Image (cartoon, one colour):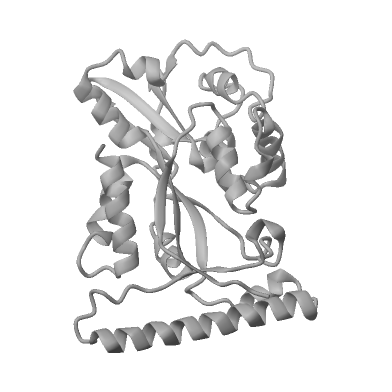
Length: 301
């Protein structure tokens, strides 16, 4: 028997200072395998991710460096889609997500020994390069500069990650913001018939409160029709999977845009600012607008 759940969109920030652990959490969202996380599970998980080539998960952590004047940043400046290069108070900085560093920096680079110290399970080549011309911009570094300098550095070079539960319609809009990195719960690998989902499917009901042209009675009828349709779809999904033995990756084709999904979204403060300009606007759809307002409030604290 199916038990349909109507849930509301939600947002929470994902914070973990241990190098690698936030990336593991984001990667496991795709398969809802967070129950496998333990103190050192991230090492094997991320090493396997790198070897498999599914390296988008490595985009959820960012590493920033202050560089001396003798370090050539021209090649990084040409790759602005992956690297951020700039100056603050006369100091030069370059940053990128872990995937970009892994794919673009070799063991002969001054950056490599520092990256290896943070992620030895990803940067595994032997390295005897002098890394003194670059400094990792970590919490200790940021605590040593002025508040204004810290704010400027973090604005362009730090990353904030949020886990968002919303409809598939909303995630389709979120992933249009190409400066961000995403990992999303997979309807292919997540079989909602399984125990981890309680043999039920979560759905997001559209918000009709701000639709002025409908009366309360009309809104109630619309909501009832939505629920009837969603109940029927969920029942059909489980009939296909449980009784007709169709694979979940094929049965997912009947799931609607109202199906709830979990997605993690990582971006720099400057990226989020552009996101808010578009998605906090009154013309944005209600669901994504509500999500944007929550994230904006969390970033302002």
